[in-house]
Image (cartoon, rainbow, N blue to C red; front, side, top):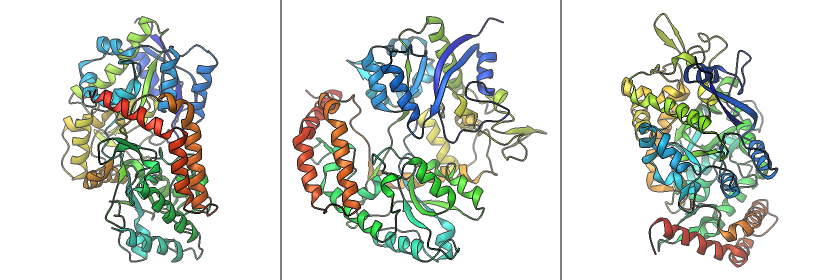
Length: 523
């Protein structure tokens, strides 16, 4: 056998990833499979946590220090990706992708051409998007069903009903411990409002007809910035009211991904807006700590005037950057590895990855597949998190078709099951209610697609953004937090809007629309 080709990389540590048998990102059952089966030695130079921003910080330091880049790396933050693109240290990947990517991978990418937009410069592609289906990235309202049942309540359908449930969840002891220690609702807003798949706050602003920190068309088709729209002022007033009533945490301005998930796991949070995979993480942690606890997904309630806007995710979870100094041999090894993963979509074999998944994602015993911890030595883990991309593969149309069939309780064929094979779901898993609930959450997401507000600006930072954006974002967050905490009057929002516009916001709006016209072919 020929010597495997080494492909150097760095890794972001997924907070939900688990290891056993002394394994790590550097050495595990998946990396050994890649080495022994594909002849690709995935060599991890270092790893760092994703959830607290450490990984992103280390990427920036690596770039600014002038250190030699690994052959490939994954970036999950567009600003960081843009820095690498601007540095001139990464490969123009368009030609390489055209030459080496398999027809299957290309077909999947062709379904979401807009995924390339953030990673282009002068019409050329400088990073390969890690694509994903967007259905299910919208927040649905996850509610403690056991609390609803105990208090004889129904899921809220409008703002008034939402506040009735919130009041009950705080003041009627839903957990039955005799203490006033529950939160009606939790969300993340530390340093930013967007970017929290668990604890999404954007839908709350959507009740008042605006989505902050997002560019989307106004009534004339021009892109507008959501953070300066009139509805934001109404939403801030309502969030302030909720804080004063104790419906949300007193230290809500400090809540980030980790803080929100901790509260959910400890069983103190009644409602949270989150993506479809919430039940798998951190919902499963709630269940582990309290077997009677149960979160159920519901459609978002309507606002006072029947308004209901929500964010929808971009069609990618990150991007793969390739060093311009990569050897031809290592580059071919990278594409060989990725093509091999995507080959599963051309098979009828849900056990395509059995060589490394058996005993980890599932256990085959006496001709039957088991997913429970009792049958899997050392417990169940998700080996997809060990892969170079660290997430599910995606062929969007086929993935969504399978998810919806699952949610409707329809029988899955082998052709359906191969779409979930990389994630380890090789047959109907009747033992895992969390994955079943996730697919139902996707089905619920489809009820309100007319409320979806996507991010229309997918270009690199504009000239004025590079100079002013950090300060403008800080001014926004300072103003919003001070209003919510009662340290500034609600009217200070109007002063913020005026200052935002005069301090670079108008110029940024013009630049954003110039980019928007360019990608639409408008002269």
